[in-house]
Image (tube, rainbow, N blue to C red; front, side):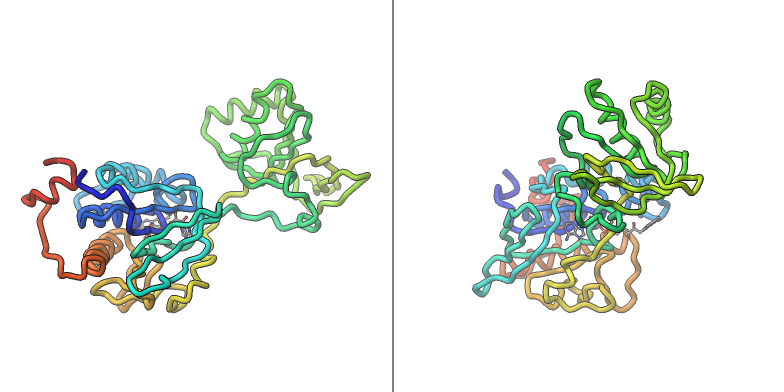
Length: 342
Ligand code: FAD
């Protein structure tokens, strides 16, 4: 194989810049672990503007966020990163010996070892927006869910949210005819979802499988050993909803989270780097894309691509201990081998 079987470098974040970092590391003969908190790649391009056009990626006059991600995925395919999607990097510990491996702990307990780390964490890990109301902390963990998980039979489910994730979750739960009707709670009777999902929602409402409750959640309290969610409805009346399961789908928001605790120099929540190697203050840790800062920094995808390229050269030089010569993808037999086009 053109690339080693073992991943030696850790890339934190699978936004456009993290994806291109995987490609550039691959050209250097390095395989990467690729971690993202989202269950899919693409970062902001996929999550915030998947269907909107981008006009300033060199050589691509126009493409949507999602199309750019698909093109990048095609480009990095030969580099076969080891993917850890839907996983957040919680902790990063320095090597115990000079030249040893960094250890990254993921939120599922997995520990990844890497001789170099490239942080491409953008504006932070995309995590579910939390519902903050009185009494929510008293709910047992099997009642409050931000991600899909099996629901025991005969459970009274309230799904809270008004966009695709909430609508699709409510529909999925009603697919089982034995399941009791699902309550879909939203502040108004208007839902944002693809036309097919909206049509299915209307049908499920007509059949009594989904009950839409318009209102604002106010508080959660225990009544007779069971949890009850109190909602302020459109008429200003309080409604009590029995709660066997609360599925919150209020969208995602980025959190810088643990990165601030990794002992790496920050300036206004950005990682400080030099512009020759994109190295941070921690030896062997680099930062590219929206997460870094340096004089003249612009948060643009093409700037991130440049940073990823120079960081990959710097990682290769650090790991080999020798200068790395420039080669062209057009003419280099070695790069052709790594690209799988030899
Ligand atoms: P991101 O895209 O933010 O990806 C970072 C990824 O890291 C995320 O997926 C996040 O979940 C993950 N992550 C973070 N921390 C962790 C952790 N601890 N563990 C696991 N995963 C983690 N730029 C342009 O050049 N042209 C445009 O036309 C343009 N239009 C835009 C339109 C909008 C509406 C927005 C919001 C931005 C636009 N941008 C545009 C900016 C561009 O999207 C960003 O510059 C780009 O996404 C930065 O890429 P990135 O890979 O650095 O970070």
